[in-house]
Length: 149
Image 1 (cartoon, rainbow, N blue to C red):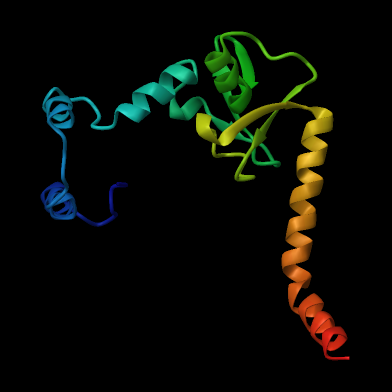
Image 2: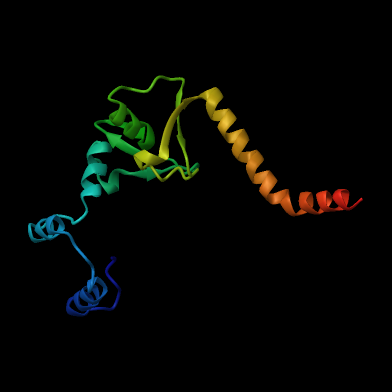
């Protein structure tokens, strides 16, 4: 939660405490919090997959792709995550497809490795489905007119 402007520390802490009231935490989360660590284990796993890149080291380009620094190289985050999961570098012909079409959503379950041809087929199919959904009212009325005659 960002620090609200114009509030003192006690006011901010009271507001933060009020927002977290009733939050259910596991025993492991409570131990992590009392040790001064973050409650979420997912953040730790994500940091390992990203090459321990800090939030400040991340940047997003005009196409929405997230870039991170791994060592002294700037790499696309989704490719790095898939390479870590597969345990090998991706070939030049291999692409990473985001299943939900959000290039900033780099969760492993949202990433799929494929070649250029497969990627093109997937995107054409997605475009066709979107077009059919958009045109459905017109198609439906056309079928109704044809069926009545």
